[in-house]
Length: 236
Image (cartoon, rainbow, N blue to C red; front, side):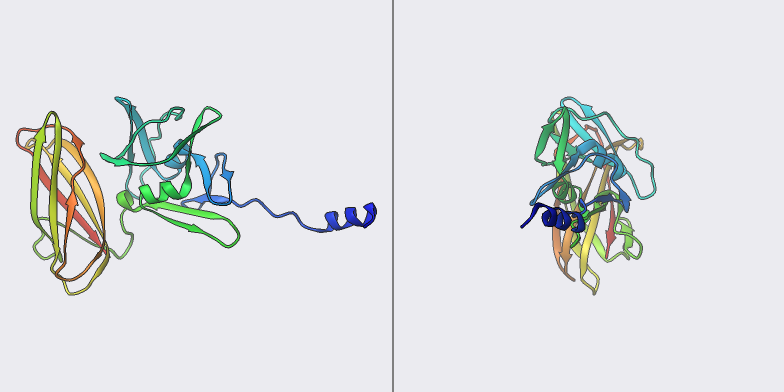
């Protein structure tokens, strides 16, 4: 093949466009590393785009994701590999220090934060808001442990504290007639004065009528002489 014909073929063949990362329907503004089996992006940039806030406290990265529509409070640029907690629950992410910044795998973030995640045939990646904090969306049934008419019922809750930490569990039961694909369980622990001591969220999958599920409390920082537990549910 002549050099002239080869140059003509190269000129006439369109170059494949680099895929794009979208977070909550907006193009991700930070750097993205594309690999055949993974997509890496800066952890702090992803958290901010997802509406989350974060801070480093006692050698641990504490992450909080706000409710739908709330503005992110942001946090510092992350340049150090640290253990991560989301709303008091340990989150495991493979962290990579690249060019003085922490990069993480986007699909691992989606799994850890319970985000909707989709990779299209064109290679584009769509990451949506965390279910754990932002809820199950329009049409989800909502109730609390004080609502006797809500189909998901709090059967039992146990709470213990030692050395400044809280541990425990809650047992829930589906008393309604229709199966739920997802049940979001939000647990908040207060002092009787009303001060919030700790909170966390758990997602229960495929809860059938008459079925029970245990929600194990993580090791939560906080102590109270007379803790009060409040449980909220979303189901769909």
